[in-house]
Every structure is written in structure tokens, then in C-alpha cells.
Image 1 (tube, one colour):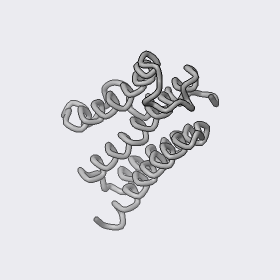
Image 2: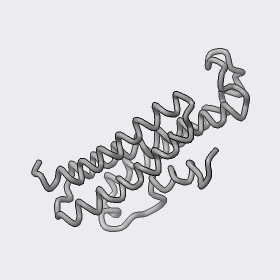
Image 3: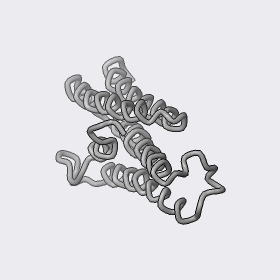
Image 4: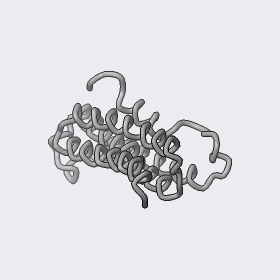
Length: 153
């Protein structure tokens, strides 16, 4: 890896760092900070691809690293936020998971569809040769921004 590819890869790692910090924030009940992490990560995600193209260093490592970072930040993190928001709305937030009403737990687990489908979407993108020069469907970061919402929750 040369210094030119270190720049976009560093931006991608910034995206991943924001995803990890956002998950930590969500587990500490800081949903506002967690949703801000998605926004900051989206900026990193935009600029990593921009920098790679500008520096002419687009490659397989960057593509895989970007998908892995996106899986955490724009898949797992929004799923955690939704899980917490559903738990709060059902009055279960302070109830241990093992003691929750099974129906409530089933409704809360619906939030796990987000990371599962996001990661499936990213895997399909990585192997679909039709998407090498144009994107088909909703990008995973756009879905995460949709989940995050335009206002504070």
C-alpha cells in the first residue's frame, strides 16, 4: 500500500471508527450521538471514494474495506438504533432481554432485518459485475440516513 492509497483507506477507516463509536453510544443510551455518528461516517464514506478516484488508486482492497466499513456503520449501527427505539416505544428499554414479553421481543427483533439486508446488499454489490460502473438499487448509506431520520428522536 502506497501513501496515495493510504488516504482513501484512512477515510474508510474513519467511517468504520464512526460506526464502532456509534454502536458504543447506542449501547450507552446515547441515541442522539449514535445518529450523529451515521452522519459523520457518511461524510467519510463520500470522501473516501472521491479521494480514491482523484488519486487514481481505486482497487480491490479499497472496495472490500469500504463494504466492511459500510456493513458496520450503515448496517449494524442503524439496526441497533432501531432495536433501541422499538424497545423504548414498548417500554422495554430497562427490562433485561431475557425477561421481556416474547411478543415485544419479536417486534424488537424486526430491527435486525436492517443489518441482515444491508450486508446482503453489500455482498451482492461486490460480486455483481453489472454494478461496476453504475449503481442499481438503494445504496446502504442512503438507507442508514433514512433510518437515522431528519430529526432527533
